[in-house]
Length: 202
Image 1 (cartoon, rainbow, N blue to C red):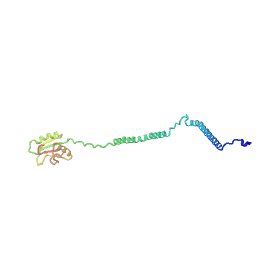
Image 2: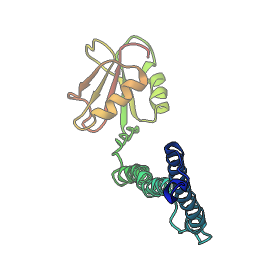
Image 3: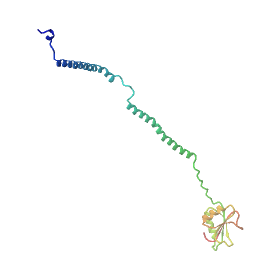
Image 4: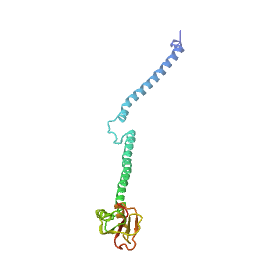
């Protein structure tokens, strides 16, 4: 007769090993599945924090801050840069004022000498009535004819003689009549009149 120990079914060792492996695999599968389920269940809770409907902060993103900062800087620098042309314009506006405050002194033209003398006309040539005819030219030049006569003496060429203080009037008379010789008056010439002595027609 077989005893109770012999009656027990003995499983082969390979089957036992396979069972153990199956148990281990099942256990690992259970833990992995449980962890994945926990992760999947937890993920919806974390998503609202990332994609919450809470209003965004008024502060713009970093890129926008940088752009706005640059724009703000540009705006602040703008007036400073515009101030330079304004200063130059102010200087340019001030320069004409300075010029107006200090006008250049213009040279005043010297007054023209007006005929203001009496002239005695003398004939020292062989031409008859030369002094009388020349007196008309003297009057046309604006001078007053004091007298007409003949001059006796040797005069090299037609000359205008002038007493002291009447040189300008003598020059004006000589230039008007085209006489190229002027000398101070000598006796017996008048001391307050010009003397025109003619040696030829003028």
